[in-house]
Amino acid sequence: MKKDKLFSIISIAIMVILAGLYLTVAVPCEHDGQGPAMKCIWTHRVVIGLAIMLIITGIIKLFQRPSVALGINMVEILIAIFGLSVITFIIGTCGTPTMVCNDLMRSSGLISWIAYIIVDGIALFRYKSLSELPNDTHLN
View 1 (cartoon, rainbow, N blue to C red):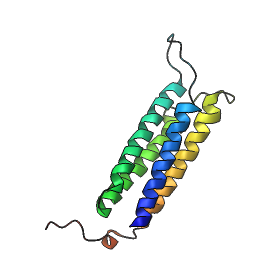
View 2 (cartoon, helix red, strand yellow):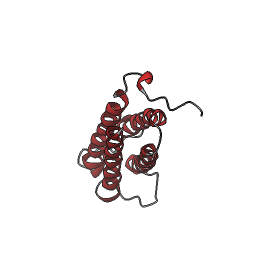
View 3 (tube, rainbow, N blue to C red):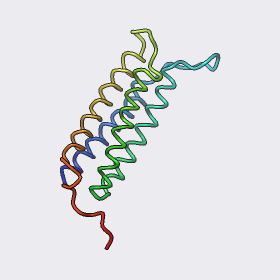
View 4 (cartoon, rainbow, N blue to C red):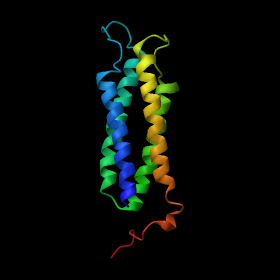
């Protein structure tokens, strides 16, 4: 059980690092209010929201029964896949290779989302089957 909490703590740390990077270093271009906002601004907003949501669910997962934590883990992987797809093809970043969007936002986002999926995937597949979970779903 302690290893499961370790995976949750590592997942939370990855999202804290991603949110910290996006709030301090990997910021999008400034928008002057004229014309539509660039893709990097919308990607930035979505990634920050998803990272905060995964931090909150990771903290909740620390205090749940193993069967509930397993379900939360599955949902977190799906959210992380969505976050990865936001950066790559749903919204994307600016097309200019020398802009901050491509240099920092895209690379830090890709690394963080892939690391998150791997860590949560390892935690998910530690249970070979649902029958290995402790019988904590019965009502007393």
